Image (cartoon, rainbow, N blue to C red; front, side):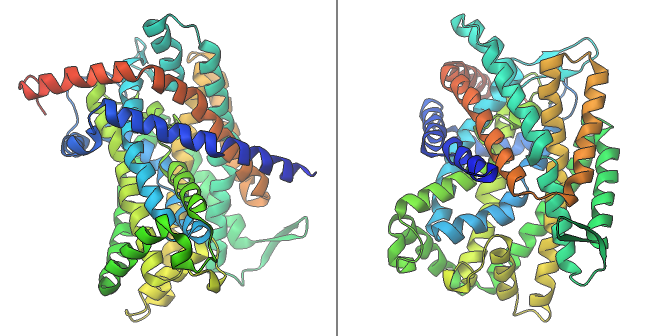
Length: 479
C-alpha cells in the first residue's frame, strides 16, 4: 500500500460515521438544552453582530472576531465543497447540509460562550483562549478533571492543520490553479516532476506570499482589519451573483427545492439510481457542511476569545451567525444554483469546481456574455476566499502554538509565522492531494477533544445562557 492510499484510509476513519454522529449529537443536545436558541435568538445575534460592545476586555471588536472566523470558514468549501457533495451524493446532500448547519449553529454558539468564559487576558491586554483553555480549565473547575493532555492534543492538531495544509499549501495551490485556468496558454516557468508550472502560477504564488506576509506579520489586529473589509465584500458580491442567477431562473426554483427534498429521502427516485443511497446523501451533505462551517471542530472559538466583550453569551450569539452566513446563506445559494441549472447531472461527467462553473455558465446564459464571464468571476471568488482562509488559519494555528510554548516565547512565534509564510511560498510547486488529506485528518482530529468538552460543559453553557437572557428580558443589558 502506498502512502497516499494509507492516508486515504486514515482520513476515511477520522471523518467516518462516528465523528459525524457525535457532531450531530452534540448539536442536537445543545439545541434541546438551549431551547432552540439558534431560532429564538437569531434576531439578537444579528443585532449584536453589528453593534460592538463597549467596555469589554479583548483585542478586537466582536465584528472583527467574527470576520476573522469567517475568513477561515468562508472558502473553497462554499464553492467546491457544495459541488462535491451534490455531485457525489445527489441534490439531497444539500438538505442534509442544512440540517447539519442548523444543529451546528447551537454548537458554534456554545463554543463562543466557553471561549470567552475561560479565556486568559494578560496585563498587556493580549488574549489567549479557545478549546485548549476550556478543556483544561473548564473541566477542572466543573468536575475536578485534569485533562490538560487533551488540551495539548487539540493544540498540536491545530498547529499541524494550519501549517501542513488547510491554511497554507492547499489554499495557495487553489489560488494559483484558479489563476492558471484563466490563462491556459501561459508560458512554462519551470517543470517539476513532469508537471509544468506556468509563469501565471509562479507570479500568482509570489503575490499571495507577499500579501500574506504583510498581513500575518502584523498579527491579529491586522488580520482582523483586512478580514473586516475583504470577507464581507467578497461574500456580498458572491451572494449578489447567486441571487442574480436564481432570479433569472426563478421559475425553476420551486422544482429545484422539491427535487432537493425528494432526493434527501429517496435519491434513486431523482437520480435514477446513478447517485448513491440516502446514506450517501446524508454522509456527503453532513460531512461537507461540517467541513465548510467548522461547527464542532473548535477553530472558530479561538477567534471568538479575542473579542472585546464582558458577556460570553453575547459573543456566543455573534459566533453563531458565522454558521448561519457560511452554510444557511452562502452554501444554500451555491447548491440551489447547481440544482436549478442542472449542472449536478452525473451524465455531464463534471466534478468539483467545474460543476459550479457549469452552473453559473448555464444560469447566467440569459445575460449577454454571462456564460463567458462566469468562470472568471468564480476564479476570482476562489482567490479571495482562499486568501482569507490563509489569514484565518494563520491566527488559529499560532494561538495553538502559543498555548503549547507560552505566549511570551516571541521568538518561536515569530519563527512560526515565517515558516507559515514559507509554506505558502512553496505551495504552488507541490502536489496537494496528500496535503489535502493530511489537512482533512488534522482538522477532524481537532474535533474529538473539543466535542468531549462541549458535552461535559453543556450545563455551564445552559446556565450562562439563562442568566444572560433573564438579565436581557429584565432590561439590565443594553445594546
